[in-house]
Image (tube, rainbow, N blue to C red; front, side, top):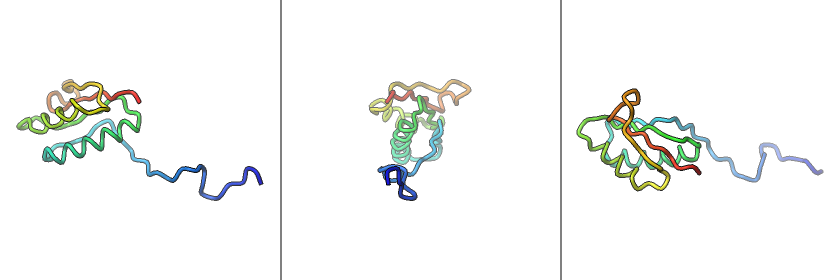
Amino acid sequence: MSGARIAGRSSGRPDVPVRSVGPELLLLGQTTDEARDRVEQYLDDAFLAGLASVRLVHGKGTGALRRAVRDLLACHPLVESFRDGEPSEGGTGATVAALKVG
């Protein structure tokens, strides 16, 4: 019976849910703690999805979210570099991060 397959099984790996990851994460209205948690998860997901860069929209406001996001990016092992967004990307209300190649 070589070549026989059990219905519903295509490999020996368990089914892993696939998340759709877009190139942008909106953080507006979140606390710095909430934003840090979301950015951590998002960077992991974006890296696994093979994204080369991501845009984190924190807004301008008091600058607290921007500082929290950039502090995290500065020491995150998956981040190669980061910069202010271009005017068309949200300017100083967004940070664009280049991810390391896996």
